[in-house]
Image (cartoon, rainbow, N blue to C red; front, side, top):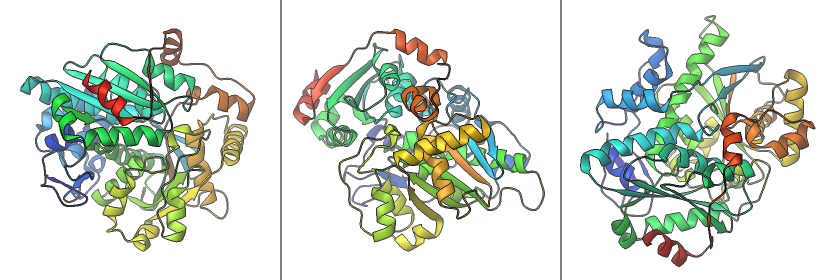
Amino acid sequence: MRFRSILGQSSSVSFREALFHGLAPDGSLYIPESIPLLKAQPADRGITHRFPDIATEVLSAFIDDLPTEEIHSIAERAFSFPIPLVKLEQNLFLLELFHGPTLAFKDIGARFMARALSYFLEREERDLTIAVATSGDTGSAVAHGFFNVPNISVFVFYPSGKISRLQEQQMTTLGGNIHAVEVEGTFDDCQHLVKRALGDRDLVLARNLTTANSINLGRLLPQVTYYFWATHLLQQAIGSAGQPGTGSVVSVPSGNFGNLTASVYSKRMGAPITRFISASNANEVVPEYFKTGIFRPRPSLQTFSNAMDVGNPSNFARLQALYGDNLHEMQREIAAVSVTDGETLDEMRRTYQQSGYVLDPHTAVGVAASRKSQSSGSPSKPTVVVATAHPAKFPEVVARALNTTIPVPHQLEDALQRPKHSIQIPADYMRVRELLLS
């Protein structure tokens, strides 16, 4: 499998090269030259019912410069936590992706990427610097995924005062090879600074620089795997009557749009998914595009679902490439829905009152969007909402919505007790360059 740039002005590369480069030399993102087709879902072949094995088969279809046995070994170590499917109500399910060390779905991509990079670096005997921008959960997932990984230094850029205290503590208290950089600006400022650094050829060569944002294929491709897992679990949940899993809908809380892109990849590979719901918060650049045909990036707005506060989503270019920049074709498979903060709180209350389940604000956006896209308010087809984070990471929002508190998992309690260490800088590229070269 080779990977090409979206603009097509750079040579195609191997997975290893895409992993280390992050961005293509022409400044655009890498995408697969083709989407491999799995004629049957891995779990339907009677071979396995374990997530690491399903993940190995899916990833092996993309990656041919890692031996299959090494991919399996990485998957066993990276995906060492449960990923259950929880029934919320009739035809509505949650895929809980938040049981990893930082209690967010981004653990899955970050942990695979860290181990894949380590595999190559160990054999090549060289060092690597990673720069990553975060609007919340990416930073902590990358920080923990790469913590104490040999030969790798990580710089996490996050917007000052615009993420939850728990998210901040998870990325600013590790030390060692993890450097937290607090930027006076928005997530979009952080993302712009990282992209500019990746486009700085002298800097890239001097520090062997790449990124662990979902613009890197090493983060994105592992996300494809859990959509196969979701449809496998859904088939088990709804039984064997008719054609189980056929016609299922997936609702994806969307910020930078890597998760939605991964879900569409899975459908193209053969996962039995009929439609997608792209669930945005008040940062509705993409829902607006679906309505008007005009893509109008703008500064992000701060919301209760802060990890989705993105005003210029990078991975949307990959999604457009999948559909040949044809909005009509995109609209046939994807419903783009925006959800306000008020609707987010309302959904958290409704779900808690009806089932006792506590949603985090991001997953609440996904659930609310799935209801808004159905005229009845309840899904008529089996619908899986991607549950992206543990609600305990957002105690202020939970308290505001439910007037209650929930127990703090030990992972978060430990982070709260450690002292914070961050480097504070303005949103100025020359300061970033100086920092990365120091």
